[in-house]
Length: 228
Image 1: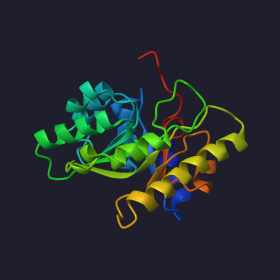
Image 2 (image 1 turned 120 degrees about the vertical axis):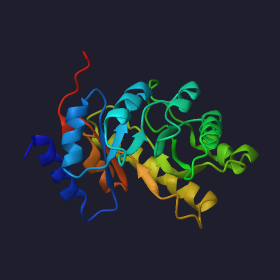
Image 3 (image 1 turned 90 degrees about the vertical axis):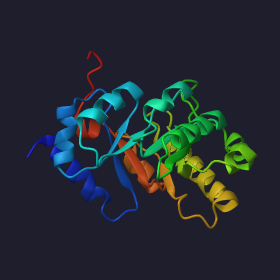
C-alpha cells in the first residue's frame, strides 16, 4: 500500500467519529498521484485553479466529487459549470449570479453547491467577504431568484501563522458567522450545514472549533511541485 493510501486511511480514522469530511487538495499533483488516493477509496477532491481542474477532470473517473477551493473569476465559471459539485470560494453576489447563470445554461439537474467564503485572516492576500457583505448577498432579490445554486455553508482561510491562539480565534469567528447566518437565513434549511476550515498545518485545531470539512493537500500527497 502506498504512503498516499496510508495517509487517506489515517485521516479517515481521525474523522471517523466526527461530522467532518476530508477534501483532498490536488494542487500541482499529478493524475497518477490522485488516482492512488482514489484507489484507496477517496472521492472528494479539491482544486485551486480552473484549468488544472478541467484537465484532471477529463482524465479521472467521473464519480469524483470535485470542489473548487481557489479564487474563481467570473469568466472562468463556464469551464466547470457542467461537472463541478461544490464551489467553496464564492466571495461576491456577482460571482454567485454567474454560477447560477452557467448552471442554468447547462440544464443541470442538480444545483451547484456553493459556500460563502468569509474573510477571517488579517492578510491582504486572502479573498473573502465580510460578514455584512454575506448578509447583504442573502438579503438581495437577485439571490432569492437563483434556482440553480444551493448554499451549503461557509469557508474560510486562516492567517498563515504558528500562533495557535490566533488560529483558534479565527476559526471561532468563522463558526460564529456560520451560526448567525444559519439562524437568520437557513434556520429550517438542512442544506446549510458545512464549515470548511482547516488545512494540513491546522486541521486539528479547526476540528476542535467545529469544522465539518478540512482541506488537506501536502498532508496526503507530500510537498507540492511548483516547477511543473
